[in-house]
Picture 1: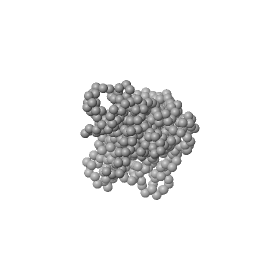
Picture 2 (picture 1 turned 90 degrees about the horizontal axis):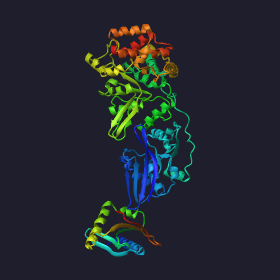
Picture 3 (picture 1 turned 120 degrees about the vertical axis):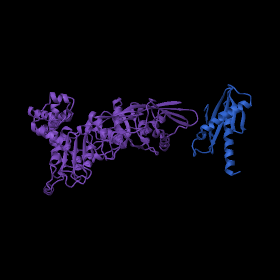
Picture 4 (picture 1 turned 90 degrees about the vertical axis):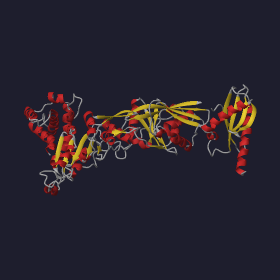
Length: 508
Length: 123
């Protein structure tokens, strides 16, 4: 009898594809079939869509209804197709004009009363639509905040099926951008380094880590302040650029984690999975819907794993690939998904199971074997990728009673931003931005430290105290120290400092 | 027999009469009505002007409170209609003739003509 088409987007990971929702209504016994590899949630759309249409005082076609989601070979999932299915059915009956449906995508889950509910992944859906050249999107009004970072696409928030029908019948006029509060979330009201008493060397290590993007391991007694320092690391990182913020928000959008993180936030994310987390929770995965794991949620931010040696074997090592390549590729039967995962890894550990094997270790009750085994759980290849290994001592009475609040995050951040700017200037003609990303060849050719510093490192290499990779890592950290100092090139002092910070953890 | 059942039978009968009249008005000849065997019943058998046998299932309702009348025709019921049609043709030595299975939904109104929704060739 009649056919209609409405556009929607199907997501796999962060990649979206335009899906045509076609409806055909023909004479015959009342029936409804949904074609095009729908998953369980999508198959249930029939009852939701029907109830929503009827309860919006619109007509449900008591005929033979065939809804096809094309391309048919692409597996589709989720409830975001409810709204386009309903509109395509209404359009096939001639209840709404076809014109407004062109060049617009529709997404949203329908409640039984016809109201439009929020869905996950609105931001990546809009990015995909915008890349496909679509200029307009009708989305759940509850998700409108997510769209406000994007400029390429006009997003219209709707809260009821009736409103959408009304809007289409009025010729689908362009709606001015829904105004969202302009206040973007910044570093205010975040945990501040001013709260950390003492801990001079740990503060300094955190600062270097922030400048160059160097991964950090903190070893210290329980209660020394490792977690406090890690939590404050995002507060000294520069704000995200809009593009980076969109990337981060898109990831959190498909993970469904907007409750914790505002889509407008320019703060680098801080993700702290518990050490009992599974491998899938860390790297991402899932059978029907592939979701990002903690390492992708921490993209452009900090991934903090407390009590790292308590993690199950292999979990930490699963981070080696993303640490190396900056992304993670997850393969399942429905396809392969690549999520970005460029994070600053911060690990915290006790020195031994009882936590007291520090200094001379007098109060430690662990056997020497226990002590050795404990930190050995942090595998060599993983440790090799960690540039800064520091001890966090319990603070002394004088430090504590001084009660002089430490330097505030804003001051440290200003230094970090200045140092990063110096590095960015130096790397203007290269493809990387941070000291930790300098490739080895470039490190030898263009970014070598002072002669005396190099001699020192070569001596260490000769004595087999450091490896060739270690040597490169030390130079990278030395560059961050030099940038922080405002120096033109790393001096012997910078390199020695970097060397001691890298190798310290091993001395325990 | 309960009162309600009697009423429902009357409603059904009334709907079938209305459809028979509808078919006759459109030039089809009603050959058989309420043909019943063990497996079930065919409401109306008719032959249209081009000689096609029509097997018509009539569903009558006095309100839409319980959904559209034709929604009560499940796939199992549709299969049975198919078998009944063949059984009728076999009984009347007409196997091999062209035939079609139709459904008609009749909605009764108190003060006006019944409303007929006729769907041809539903299977």
